[in-house]
Image (cartoon, rainbow, N blue to C red; front, side, top):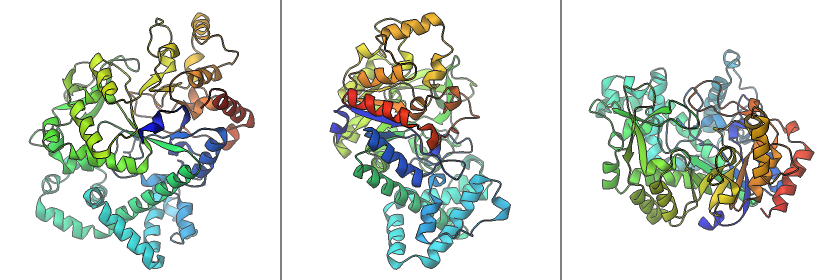
Length: 490
């Protein structure tokens, strides 16, 4: 499987929510299949998405309520209508104004439709799914039911007996919330059903799916509620330290993510089973998996929970070598990508190289330095993944246009003075490089400016909302993309 990353390929970065569709966010419906056909027609063999987990109210796919569950907001309602479980008349006047609430309402109605009209085989399939995923699904469904009951408050604010998972209150809650729990399980059944069908379609069209696994999980998640020993928490279940990164390219005060750190001693004692199970789910959903913030497997930035910024933290060692060895033992030589951006030391590089994992090269980081800049194409190695920019960067045009004339001149000189204008000059450089995989955000292919930016690190509002429409994917842009893929043997 690791050979998937050993040949020259081209990919496109686009999250599912950015697909066109009838609702406020894209889903796994018709547009997703159409997008795969576009990739195949262009010679693109990798589709990279952001994490597929259940986000909090800010919509960030990097702060999710579960390390395993899929986002029900990505479910295609048309698929449910085709199955006959959702009638086109199943709309409520009181929830039409809120797109998310409307979808939640209709998914609930689909569950009732499933109960009354599903075949014996379909009912058995649902039952089998629940049994197969019980190790995480049972806890997640109860967690979501309780979270709804308590007005979406974090589990640490629930009544003490439930916060501490006392046996009788948990048993009573399961009985009291039985119907809601079944609906949550049904949503996960549909999510996995639709995604795996999409993955099968992608395979038929020779497109690999590249997923993204955040290194940390959210404090407000079922994982922390259930597996306290996995994380650095005090006796009350609070975090003495939180995760983040020190000041860097993205922020002068660093990024205080607020996630709990891992209790690596406990994880080592249990042979990293928590991580093994987490990765097992991702490998079911994707052909290739990117480990976000890979450097945290060598050492992670621990910030005292009382600090408001990430400045006053410290690097604390992590047993990355032992973890990756356990993963390799469990799954063999699987295709993983290391997101090795930020403060990278020789130790982090050694960890990545020892396990033969490709690192990331970002062209927007390549200029204004010296010829030894590791992001300049002439410094790449084959075992790399090159991007013009990531979901955290501005688009290439948004990055390039504010630069001075001298800076723009130097960039073109370093790129070999291509005849292409931006962003195609940078796309061409990525495709021409020796990196085995070159991934381009769709915003760059569509020649978007800063209006196409997906996320601004360190901010919590206005992110994760960008969407495209098919009219933007003009024949001229598709032809340019297809030409460059063929020209550089990808």
